[in-house]
Image (tube, rainbow, N blue to C red):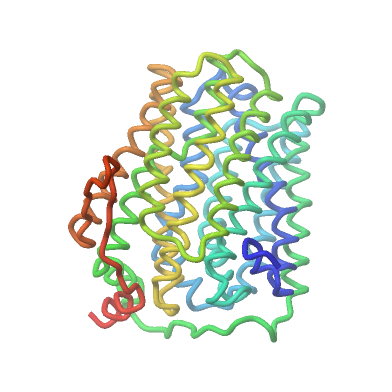
Length: 429
């Protein structure tokens, strides 16, 4: 099997991947329908309301951080995922019934977004770290990248289908389809060969375990740099529902099908970025810096595009850059963290990547409403440039980055780092 898909050699990972692609497609259909419902059905093109929904849906990642990482480290992750996935399906069903019946109001969407965020806060770290049990340490980086590929394939398919269904039957049916799609991932979890899961050591029950995860991160300059870069881009840059929907409605004056199309186009770039990450033997922090730089440049160009066609073209590069950055940060953190602390450290990463939406999405929505969608994209681009500066500072201070000219071309070098030794040393401090 090609090295790009090597994690699929394991039957458990194949089962998980099959269920995930179906469920992820339903999830992206609901996200598209929910954003469009809020922007055009429940408000008069109010981007701030979309930002509030995003903040409520992703904010619990940060607010519940002391509990979610511990749950991923202590509990049986497969059983935890069975509970969270079933709960998320039930919430999609409830919102779908309200919407199809014509009873939905904006506050209903707010409540369901908050409840979904609370469940997702427990689901996400368990799901991310469960990959190591499915694929093993040797194929972990590849499995993480393939997970991202699956997620973004669904992101490419789901919004395109959603745009057509919104125009034909309305947003409510998308929520019902999403509720049904959770059956696929629940079935895959039930069919897993439990005896073939790669074992792990559960974290012992003792006070101060969450603080131990924070202390571990603080002792690692590389993790601090990665998480700060992720904070900047996650807070102000990864607000694509606001960027794309407001450009579509306010600048290009297009409908739901165009919104679904533009979201799918960006997902095409994300799939490309994820597949490129899957081919790498191991991620490096240089990939983060490069991804952040490309994100800044591509988002700047997107803000200037005068029509939907050229805007769509730049979104492909935005997707490649964003996926290169997020996949590399996920893999780097998982591979360089001690297994007993992985759940807590990944919960911190996810709280930063998603929970900071609680801060960033309302701000980006306000910028889009007050100054226009192009300025909102400009703020996202600035976050990419700021992340580049953080990465360069780390490389100069801790990895002795050196740049020289050879035959008129710049060449750079950095000192290697033994992540295993760094992880062990931080765990002992």
